[in-house]
Image 1 (cartoon, rainbow, N blue to C red):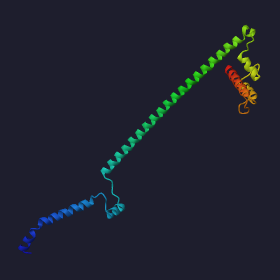
Image 2 (image 1 turned 90 degrees about the vertical axis):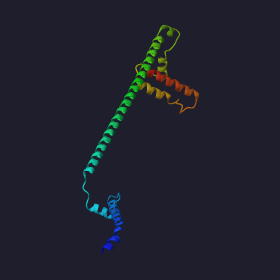
Image 3 (image 1 turned 60 degrees about the vertical axis):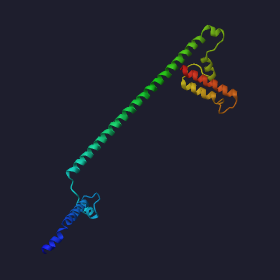
Image 4 (image 1 turned 30 degrees about the vertical axis):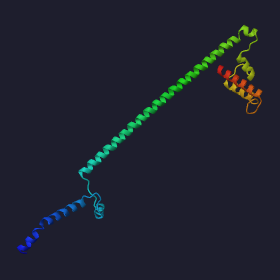
Length: 191
């Protein structure tokens, strides 16, 4: 080529260089693209990429994150266990207090019944022919002498069979059943 040919193409040199730079940039873009081409995926399947230092640090960070998450879960579980133990302890204390309260009420009732029983054994109760509730309850259930809770319950079942509200609709039977129930409760409280 002569001098005339070089001069003729020299005005296009900047465009040619610009085109080469654009092609180079596009090829770099394709190589670093987020979604690899099919050919690159096949190559990656056949030849797995070795891990680099960045991947190792990422794995360490993930392991630390998992360890921290496990630690938090253990702390949460321990906290829940402690809270449940505290709730159980409070329920136990409330039940214990309720049992003590019930026992105190039963003891007061027993003492009251004993005091009443001592009154009914006095001379004025004899003179005025006043019977004690305990003696009336024993007579109603057909008990005498020494007896325990099982004998009281058995006597109640035997006497109440015919007058139970489920078997008899009469008002007298229902009133008799209520008297038998009160007598049984009185005698069981006194034992």
